[in-house]
Length: 292
Image (tube, rainbow, N blue to C red; front, top):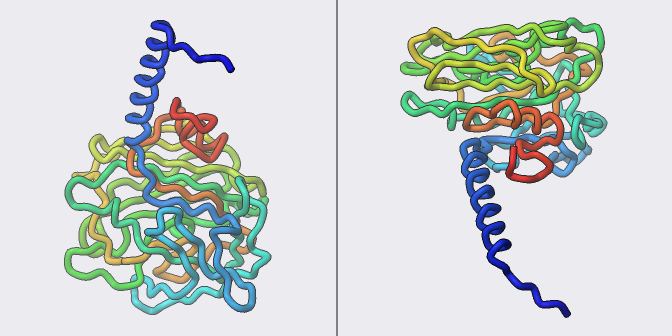
């Protein structure tokens, strides 16, 4: 058996490698996962009839489930279960297909809602919109916190929504404050075609210090937009629930055939390399390594 000898050269090599790993780890730690719904079959729960009723969040803090959402008027909307056949081939593993009569609610993203010190964040998910349906949905239905209660003192009715907005556009809006809230930003971006029956990754990053919103489509930068509001921090939602698939003030739900996969929420702004990595390999790390 050969004996491994650690020469001065190899010592310095180990030192350099260790320093690189430390610096990369420090960079990576700036973006922590707030929530991640993979919609893989292993993360889905079913009822006694085989219908899909839950979708786990990998952090365990925002597990999603079919149920009821009161809407901003408190009237209430109830989701039908997802048939087992709605677990479909996704961008990575399996995705979830909507049928125009169902949605899922989850414990809201309160990690992003702080009057002071709210973190910068990144929202990213994959959609597959039926071909020729002119977008087929609005951001207010795709990934949103439309509430299950009317606004109360010191609370806004909703604070965020993200999603497709047309055949070649994506849109988002965030708010803070009371009542209907005050808009931090509301912006629609022109992209490549969304409603072509193929999987596309939509990504937004927002810096709560500078007010800079970056928009990406399929891992590629589209444009920047700078918010001009008095506050850049989402805060004070009236709703303890977020949801996939429902515009809670009127009960509109994602259209039949709309598919969703790999929904990520990060605390921190991903850079262009990390977004490209997420598109290529469903990880902000390149080829499983810490280097970006």
